[in-house]
Length: 167
Image (cartoon, rainbow, N blue to C red):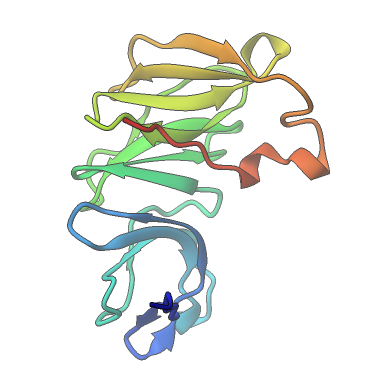
């Protein structure tokens, strides 16, 4: 059998965005703008996978990106407070929290399979590494360094990457 691909439609139009992530209830959270209303409001949006509705805006900062989901929580990265940090928000738009708070770049969050932990990349100490923390932002610790040219320029733009946590 051949795989079939189709464009995600919402309320009769194409859905344009980046970094899609499936929510447990079948909806998709992604980085985008409200193109159906002039496209000036960018952030994270949630859309039903059947395309039956206009996307709902989840966050309000245009730098919000790389969403990861577990249960009713979405973790994402943003420069809304001056440098790349990790945040979380409920899928209904409530309980926005900054999970990391320091002067280094941190992002690309991903939940552990149980949702108890979040892994992410950080350049703390001047070298990129994979770190982990509890899902509430506590208990952060470095797991291992990333070697080579990771994050070192246009060819290795870390903000365009994703990481995942396998069981």
